[in-house]
Image (cartoon, rainbow, N blue to C red):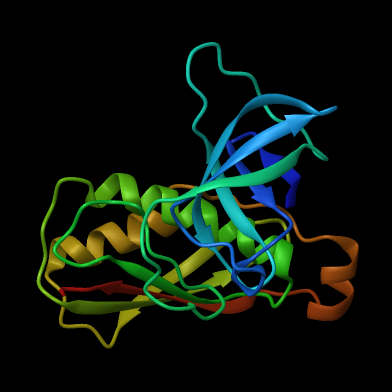
Length: 204
């Protein structure tokens, strides 16, 4: 059983308080209960060690879920490709190979999970219905305490120009991101923090 920890109103996804270390996998379906009443369904779209991201998969009159709503697993749709490292995901899209992301952000799990989810949703939309050759795109950028980003630089890539463009846009479009908390500012300093996203276009 898991619990909804928060909802991102901008991108309409949910953060669940369990991750792949708790055997939650991308593709899993969960019934959502409130006060012992079934109110809908969530599909897990990406995981990190201690938190997961899900989308509302309810049918008919869809209602929002709230912090504290409980999740019970009802189905596992797809075989897992193996535990992914922190900041790695496999979007639920039909491809010759599942694309994935690796991230190096702030080290604050909840913040990084929301940042991670925003970029992956943006990237998923950009690459929908497209094909690719196996390649990797590394993008470095500055992240400021107020959520701004700048100085995006691509390096160490053999990917086609259009795939590089999608990676830049996937990072740029959701900005500005969530501002750092007081604790983050105290530990990370005034910023900016140099971050890296590695986009993996895989072919199986």
